[in-house]
Every structure is written in C-alpha cells, then in structure tokens.
Length: 174
Image (cartoon, rainbow, N blue to C red; front, side):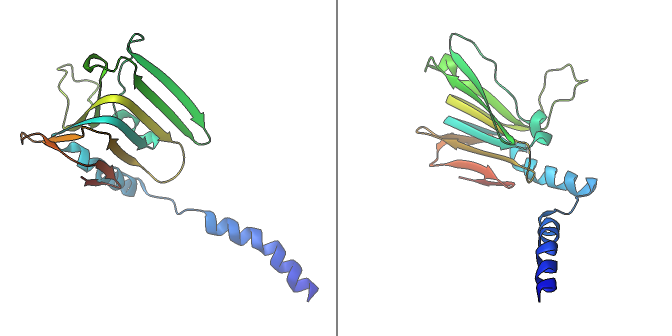
C-alpha cells in the first residue's frame, strides 16, 4: 500500500507537466492562424472612438502602428507586468489636435518608397490608446474600441454610430 502511494506521489508531477505542455504548431499552421486573425483588419474601415485597446502577441507588432508623441499634447507610459507590456498613449490636450491615428493591417513593404499603405483598418482615437503585448499564450490580434461617440465607416459607406466595436479571434463584432 505504501509503495503504491509513493509511486502515485512521484508520478503526479510528471503527469501534471505532460498535461500542461502544448502541442507544437507547424510553420504552415502558424501562418494560417496569423492570416485568419489579420483578415478582419484588411477591410477598408475607419473607426472613431474615445478609447482603443489592442492586445497582440509579438508576431503582430509590425501590423499595428504606434502613434507619435507631442510632449505638449500627449503622455506615453510603458507598464511592464509579468509576461505582458502595456504601452499607453494619452491625449492630454483633449482637442482634435491631440487625437491619435492607429492603423492595423498588413505591414508596409520596407522596400516601397511610395508611402502607400496596404489594406488596413484605421482608428481615430480621441483620448487613450493602449497596446498590450502578451509575451506568452495563444496567438492574439484583438481590439476593442470604446467610449461615447463610437463611429464606423466601411468602404465608402456613410458614417454610422455604433454601440460597440471589437475584433476578437478573427471576428468583427459591432
């Protein structure tokens, strides 16, 4: 009896470790997952919001633009947490001159000098933009636009007010 109990105690950590390991993903599977998560951002769409939170894994860093900072109008904070970095841009001025423009889409070709950008979703952020980079976990490219005065315009259609706008796990909801 004692031997069997000792064996179970000795095997428990091994079984737990085996259960926690994830199956490696092939390059082809990773590429397919990246394209699926990026697809909703490749629509000609503009979103106006008070606050924008974008959560990504490092493989999507080139897909999300980072706004510039004018010290008279903006504040930039970088908050390091366990396996996560939050980069927060805040409009101190409050006016339209302090709004941020953020684009999410296919990264620009480094050899292209035309300045033209490929298909993307453009966000006009009035107050605060948070870029949350998750250093571990599932591949992620999610966003949530919030606030009063939330507007969406798609592909030349009229501007319309919506209650919420989010893209999570490759699906747009609004």
